[in-house]
Image (tube, rainbow, N blue to C red; front, side, top):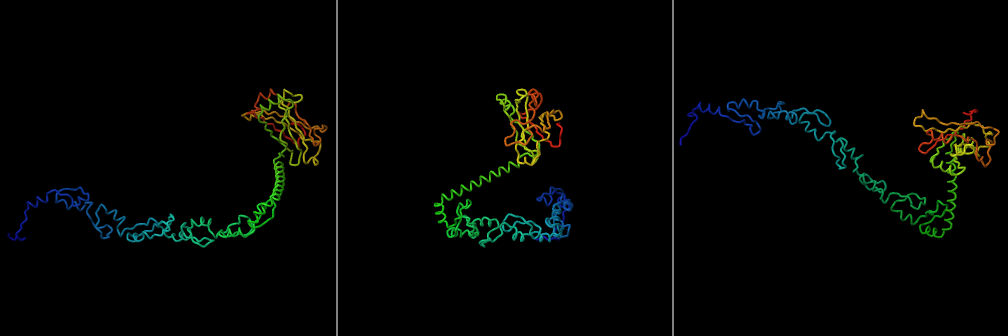
Length: 403
């Protein structure tokens, strides 16, 4: 065992050359660098190796692998410049880290766990004014409940005012005091709407109801009679409002085939139209129709007539009736340009009794056209379509010549 001193060690050029020419891997091989070459080239490789650490380009003092430099400069470098995602203000890296978690524009969940998400700067306002979990006092009992349950509490709150179910007319009483109110205060009879004026406690009402059956029956009967009269009056008013006062009637005759068959089997089958007026305070008229004809048109033609009915304003009208009357049977052709309606009209003869002021019983037939349209003509065109016929009766006071 002898000591070896540095001064006695001599380099071996051949060995050193052999070592520098040996193949080695990059020192960052475990980090993913795939470089391998002679040892003498390792230093030059490390000058460009993306896994080798170098000083931060922003001079923050950190040693960062080249491959991570961009992420470092963008996300972690204390000297980086970045904008807040919520308020969009620019900060340095360290200042941004301090700002995050305190930004007033950042949405955060309500601390009352109502599920709402609001900006941090508005959380107090939300909790005080809008949060469904904020405490709100009941306006009746004063106890505090969350906003989303206070309404449900009000439906059962003992101090909430309720109306007397007996409709005694007293002011609303607290729900907890209702039983005592019903026991101690007078209430009206259940037949009050029928006219009974009795009031009393519940016990007195029960006795009154048992003892006053006949009186109540009479009151209800009288009420029913009054309501029936009112109903008749309303029906009459509705009927007056629904009366045609335009001076023209479009009469829809449905089930034409069945009605024609009946007219051929029976003599004198007459169809009458709804009554109509020449104006609001004018003459009252009604059309009549014999599908199988009448008089000279019997069994061959369809006959149409106009009747003057006793009206409410006959005393104020001029007689005899002198308005021009026209009848129009509509051709229901699918092409309106090709339709060919049948029109007949007349000017009343003032000497005929049909046009004098009618008595309580109107003329049985009226005046019109026994041979208005032949049965043969009805088959030639579209006067009957889908088993329906349309006949218009029009009265015109301005015309003195039939058109």
